Image 1: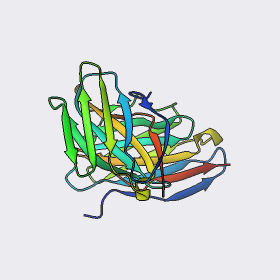
Image 2: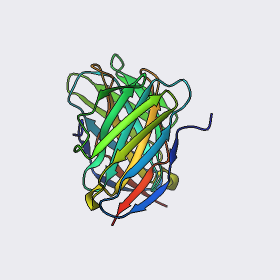
Image 3: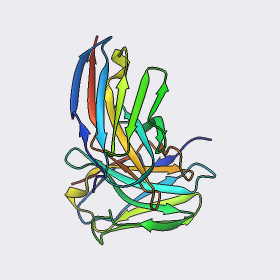
Image 4: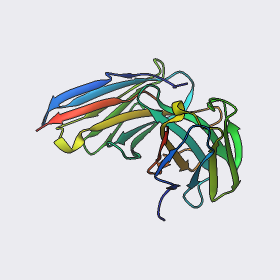
Length: 112
Length: 111
């Protein structure tokens, strides 16, 4: 397996634009997590899914953020409209029920 | 919000010395995990300790868990320059299986 795949690796966008981050989890994993990492706030859990169903989205900062998992092999995190304070590295991770999570390489988002 | 805190936030040691970092968490857990992150990269899993375990070893890593204090420690023995990275603890919560991370410890191992 190629591991967790995120795209794009880097994204630079203008304030107000819509941004969509993509994640392909490891095949067979039933948990998928979206995290945001910044120097100020560290690694924050935004939302996680179990069997494609959102379980806890309490970490989603505002209504501008939304996440979907239409099937077991694909998830998106969308920001609309984007703001400069959304600039961060966004990680996707997948796991089975209890063991360790496997992380993608992250998407570095810069909103100017 | 972060599940817990890590201590210290940064650590600088000489190659060959041991590095110890601590982590606290807030809720009941299934397990406690430690991850490593090199600059600009994703997190990589190092070791997992279950809630009914007190100590676990893997190579140069030693993890302890005290569920009564809701705390864990990671010891890296005989450190190497290549151990320079940030280390994060993560708790797998008993309710909902959420995986939340502490603030991390930045470790610098000087050759």
